[in-house]
Image: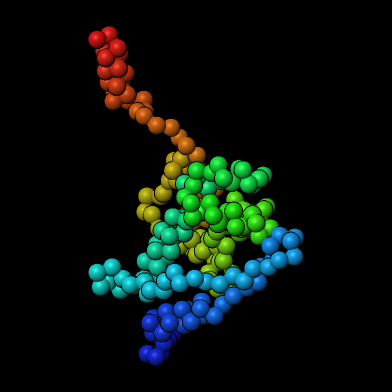
Length: 200
Protein backbone atom coordinates (compact mmCIF):
# COMPACT_ATOMS: atom_id res chain seq x y z
CA UNK A 1 0.00 0.00 0.00
CA UNK A 2 1.51 3.38 -0.97
CA UNK A 3 2.10 6.00 1.74
CA UNK A 4 -0.39 8.81 2.26
CA UNK A 5 -0.01 12.18 0.49
CA UNK A 6 1.73 13.69 3.52
CA UNK A 7 4.64 11.25 3.30
CA UNK A 8 6.55 12.66 0.34
CA UNK A 9 10.08 12.05 -0.93
CA UNK A 10 10.94 15.62 0.11
CA UNK A 11 9.82 14.90 3.68
CA UNK A 12 12.03 11.79 3.76
CA UNK A 13 15.01 13.82 2.45
CA UNK A 14 14.51 16.37 5.23
CA UNK A 15 14.29 13.59 7.82
CA UNK A 16 17.55 12.02 6.57
CA UNK A 17 19.34 15.40 6.79
CA UNK A 18 18.08 15.98 10.35
CA UNK A 19 19.05 12.46 11.43
CA UNK A 20 22.54 12.79 9.89
CA UNK A 21 23.08 16.14 11.62
CA UNK A 22 22.25 14.64 15.03
CA UNK A 23 23.87 11.20 14.67
CA UNK A 24 27.23 10.55 16.33
CA UNK A 25 29.32 7.70 17.67
CA UNK A 26 32.32 7.35 19.96
CA UNK A 27 35.14 5.26 18.46
CA UNK A 28 38.16 4.10 20.49
CA UNK A 29 41.55 4.85 18.95
CA UNK A 30 43.17 1.42 19.00
CA UNK A 31 44.50 0.59 22.49
CA UNK A 32 45.59 4.15 23.31
CA UNK A 33 42.71 4.84 25.71
CA UNK A 34 41.69 7.82 23.57
CA UNK A 35 38.44 8.10 21.62
CA UNK A 36 37.10 10.09 18.71
CA UNK A 37 33.65 11.58 18.21
CA UNK A 38 32.48 10.60 14.73
CA UNK A 39 29.76 12.60 12.96
CA UNK A 40 28.48 13.17 9.45
CA UNK A 41 29.91 16.22 7.70
CA UNK A 42 28.23 18.84 5.56
CA UNK A 43 28.56 16.64 2.46
CA UNK A 44 25.39 14.68 3.31
CA UNK A 45 23.35 14.74 0.10
CA UNK A 46 19.75 13.54 -0.11
CA UNK A 47 17.81 13.62 -3.36
CA UNK A 48 14.84 11.63 -4.62
CA UNK A 49 15.59 9.09 -7.35
CA UNK A 50 13.32 10.11 -10.22
CA UNK A 51 12.29 8.31 -13.38
CA UNK A 52 14.16 9.10 -16.60
CA UNK A 53 12.49 11.84 -18.68
CA UNK A 54 9.26 11.69 -16.76
CA UNK A 55 8.90 7.89 -16.92
CA UNK A 56 7.35 6.17 -13.93
CA UNK A 57 9.92 5.04 -11.37
CA UNK A 58 10.03 1.26 -11.17
CA UNK A 59 11.69 -1.15 -8.76
CA UNK A 60 14.06 -2.18 -11.56
CA UNK A 61 15.10 1.45 -12.12
CA UNK A 62 15.90 1.88 -8.42
CA UNK A 63 17.81 -1.42 -8.33
CA UNK A 64 19.86 -0.38 -11.39
CA UNK A 65 20.61 3.01 -9.81
CA UNK A 66 21.82 1.44 -6.57
CA UNK A 67 23.82 -1.24 -8.41
CA UNK A 68 25.60 1.41 -10.48
CA UNK A 69 26.86 3.31 -7.45
CA UNK A 70 27.58 0.19 -5.40
CA UNK A 71 29.74 -1.08 -8.27
CA UNK A 72 31.51 2.26 -8.57
CA UNK A 73 32.49 2.01 -4.91
CA UNK A 74 33.47 -1.64 -5.12
CA UNK A 75 35.93 -1.33 -7.99
CA UNK A 76 37.84 1.82 -7.08
CA UNK A 77 41.25 1.44 -8.82
CA UNK A 78 44.19 0.70 -6.58
CA UNK A 79 42.27 -0.58 -3.55
CA UNK A 80 44.08 -3.58 -2.04
CA UNK A 81 42.39 -6.98 -2.15
CA UNK A 82 44.29 -8.44 0.81
CA UNK A 83 45.05 -7.38 4.37
CA UNK A 84 47.75 -4.79 4.92
CA UNK A 85 50.80 -5.32 7.14
CA UNK A 86 51.95 -1.79 7.91
CA UNK A 87 51.66 1.93 7.30
CA UNK A 88 54.42 1.84 4.68
CA UNK A 89 52.31 -0.55 2.65
CA UNK A 90 49.34 1.81 2.92
CA UNK A 91 51.38 4.82 1.83
CA UNK A 92 52.62 3.00 -1.26
CA UNK A 93 49.10 2.22 -2.50
CA UNK A 94 48.19 3.67 -5.89
CA UNK A 95 44.58 4.54 -5.11
CA UNK A 96 42.73 7.88 -4.85
CA UNK A 97 43.88 10.06 -1.94
CA UNK A 98 40.39 9.93 -0.42
CA UNK A 99 40.43 6.12 -0.25
CA UNK A 100 44.00 6.10 1.09
CA UNK A 101 42.96 8.47 3.88
CA UNK A 102 40.01 6.21 4.75
CA UNK A 103 42.34 3.19 4.90
CA UNK A 104 44.81 5.05 7.13
CA UNK A 105 41.98 6.21 9.39
CA UNK A 106 40.67 2.65 9.76
CA UNK A 107 44.23 1.53 10.56
CA UNK A 108 44.70 4.20 13.25
CA UNK A 109 41.28 3.47 14.76
CA UNK A 110 42.41 -0.09 15.39
CA UNK A 111 40.54 -1.82 12.56
CA UNK A 112 43.80 -3.06 11.02
CA UNK A 113 42.37 -6.42 10.03
CA UNK A 114 39.82 -4.65 7.80
CA UNK A 115 41.69 -1.48 6.85
CA UNK A 116 41.99 -2.66 3.23
CA UNK A 117 38.15 -2.75 3.17
CA UNK A 118 37.93 0.81 4.55
CA UNK A 119 37.27 -0.57 8.03
CA UNK A 120 34.23 -2.65 7.11
CA UNK A 121 34.51 -6.37 7.79
CA UNK A 122 31.55 -7.57 5.75
CA UNK A 123 30.67 -7.71 2.08
CA UNK A 124 29.87 -4.27 0.68
CA UNK A 125 26.36 -5.42 -0.23
CA UNK A 126 25.50 -7.07 3.09
CA UNK A 127 21.91 -6.22 3.99
CA UNK A 128 19.71 -6.60 7.05
CA UNK A 129 16.38 -8.44 6.84
CA UNK A 130 14.77 -5.50 8.62
CA UNK A 131 16.20 -3.03 6.11
CA UNK A 132 15.89 -4.58 2.68
CA UNK A 133 15.22 -7.71 0.65
CA UNK A 134 17.73 -10.49 1.31
CA UNK A 135 19.84 -12.32 -1.27
CA UNK A 136 17.99 -15.53 -0.36
CA UNK A 137 14.70 -13.90 -1.31
CA UNK A 138 16.22 -12.64 -4.58
CA UNK A 139 17.43 -16.16 -5.42
CA UNK A 140 14.00 -17.62 -4.63
CA UNK A 141 12.34 -15.02 -6.87
CA UNK A 142 14.74 -15.88 -9.70
CA UNK A 143 13.85 -19.57 -9.32
CA UNK A 144 10.13 -18.75 -9.49
CA UNK A 145 10.68 -16.51 -12.53
CA UNK A 146 12.61 -19.21 -14.39
CA UNK A 147 9.95 -21.79 -13.62
CA UNK A 148 7.25 -19.49 -14.96
CA UNK A 149 9.02 -19.17 -18.34
CA UNK A 150 8.01 -21.53 -21.10
CA UNK A 151 9.97 -22.27 -24.28
CA UNK A 152 8.08 -24.14 -27.00
CA UNK A 153 11.24 -25.67 -28.51
CA UNK A 154 13.08 -26.08 -25.23
CA UNK A 155 15.94 -23.99 -23.95
CA UNK A 156 19.70 -24.55 -23.74
CA UNK A 157 22.10 -23.10 -21.22
CA UNK A 158 25.29 -21.28 -22.33
CA UNK A 159 27.04 -24.68 -22.58
CA UNK A 160 24.38 -26.20 -24.84
CA UNK A 161 22.78 -28.40 -22.18
CA UNK A 162 18.99 -28.74 -21.92
CA UNK A 163 17.39 -26.49 -19.31
CA UNK A 164 14.11 -27.36 -17.64
CA UNK A 165 11.98 -25.54 -15.08
CA UNK A 166 14.04 -26.91 -12.19
CA UNK A 167 17.31 -25.46 -13.52
CA UNK A 168 18.65 -22.18 -12.19
CA UNK A 169 22.06 -21.01 -13.39
CA UNK A 170 24.47 -19.27 -11.03
CA UNK A 171 27.81 -17.84 -12.16
CA UNK A 172 30.00 -18.12 -9.10
CA UNK A 173 33.22 -16.67 -10.47
CA UNK A 174 34.64 -14.53 -13.26
CA UNK A 175 38.03 -14.82 -14.88
CA UNK A 176 40.07 -13.16 -17.62
CA UNK A 177 39.56 -15.09 -20.85
CA UNK A 178 42.19 -13.29 -22.91
CA UNK A 179 42.52 -10.56 -25.49
CA UNK A 180 43.17 -10.21 -29.20
CA UNK A 181 41.72 -12.19 -32.09
CA UNK A 182 40.23 -15.62 -31.61
CA UNK A 183 41.12 -18.38 -34.09
CA UNK A 184 39.29 -17.10 -37.18
CA UNK A 185 39.87 -15.56 -40.60
CA UNK A 186 40.48 -12.22 -38.90
CA UNK A 187 43.11 -13.89 -36.70
CA UNK A 188 44.92 -15.29 -39.76
CA UNK A 189 44.80 -11.91 -41.52
CA UNK A 190 46.31 -10.24 -38.45
CA UNK A 191 49.17 -12.79 -38.36
CA UNK A 192 49.85 -12.33 -42.11
CA UNK A 193 49.84 -8.56 -41.71
CA UNK A 194 52.30 -8.76 -38.82
CA UNK A 195 54.58 -11.10 -40.80
CA UNK A 196 54.54 -8.73 -43.82
CA UNK A 197 55.33 -5.76 -41.59
CA UNK A 198 58.37 -7.57 -40.15
CA UNK A 199 59.68 -8.37 -43.69
CA UNK A 200 59.39 -4.76 -44.78
